[in-house]
Image 1: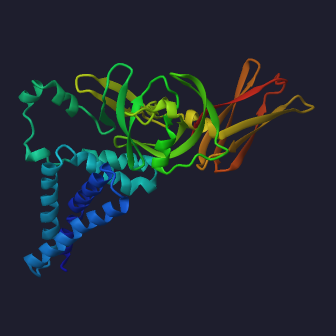
Image 2: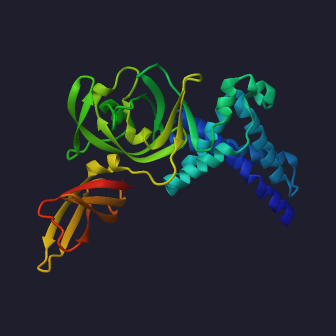
Length: 366
């Protein structure tokens, strides 16, 4: 194949990739089996291109032309069958491809996918500026940035229910700003294929029916629209679910975002916070922190801090506060792998009164 023809054929990979991501995303949004979705998307992209190339002829430009033609037909046709879903479908499909690269790469890929100009539903042209000015809802939708998602909600007052994606399974959750930890019922966890281990940490939840003990599990990935939250601690609570919702969306998920309630559109807008977020609520139950202080003859004080990681995820960073009377110090640990103990020592100034002391997990991230 001549160099120019080869470049033309390679250029078709981008629109074909977008089309394939859209097909994968549409399947996942409908909770179809992942293998079936992948095979179906591959067949719908590759086979028609091969057929078109055969029809066009043996020209070295045929492969590139076939790719562009079929990608264009898919991207123009999908909005007609699935109005308003193309952008979300592409973002979901791209996010699946980048998921092994971690949360940050996945989020960047999803944001990029959402920023690609795609056909509007039904092939409608952009709304003129004058018309948008007369439609407040359209203006609100247009002002969403690449680090924002808007989720529709049902209900009112303190009973707002929003759709949240746990891995590949969507569940309707009660958006509860008073709940620190996200909860799911045992039936919901079975649906996700998550088993509650016998040695699971236990916390006390305050529910509408009073306080109760709840075991904890660690959910690998939660999607808020196209924005991922990795390593979410979930409390097992049947009383927190009902016939409409699978559980409570706690601050350990919603707190990772700036949240705005748009009552005109009946949407909750989530915006990613900049920088690395403190994940103490998720990591704290799985990281047991302990310390031993020693006073040397020259009055130096050395504190050995140990952190036992009982989870199946690596704790990338943990900052432990050492509180000696009115004085506070910090010990830093990093890369505590699953089922292991991280250790560090901190030297305190000579003469520090540390006869009695306490330690606490102040900051942590996966």
